Amino acid sequence: MQTTLALRITGDLLDPEEITQILKVHPRSSGRKGSVRATRSPKEIISKFGFWFWKSDDVSYAMPIMDHLALLKSTFGHARDLFGSLPNAEYVWLNICIVKTEEDGADSCVEFMLDAKSAAVIAEIGLPVEFSIYGD
Image (cartoon, rainbow, N blue to C red; front, side):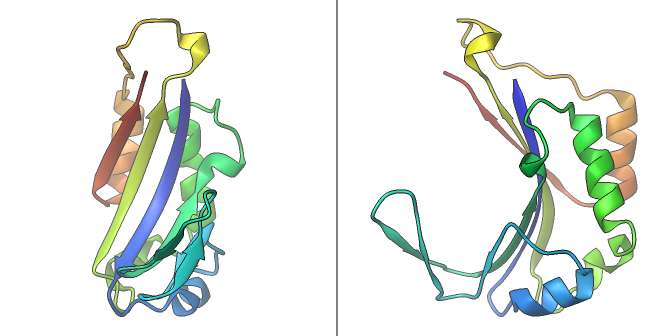
């Protein structure tokens, strides 16, 4: 199973450069509303809102959720109190993405356990959590 953790910030008037200056962390991806970005396909996407995304998958897909949370805490420890007051940020949340891999076998079910320690860290961070789970 592969896991990633993302901090996602969106808003119609969001200025990604301002968010980067405030958080003192560079995003994996960002853009203003109306910006055009390329995809892996020849298609281009026009952003319907401003966005600023940081993602932990640059480290290791094989890390357990608790290690992703520890990375988030160490990366944003200096700025965690700012999450609720970012200018023009309409939504700020965590996304935990879990992807079933071939090594997980042929079962179509994707299961994960969120232990009490990880749940406590999520509660301490204080942001809503979205789970994205992908299987065969």
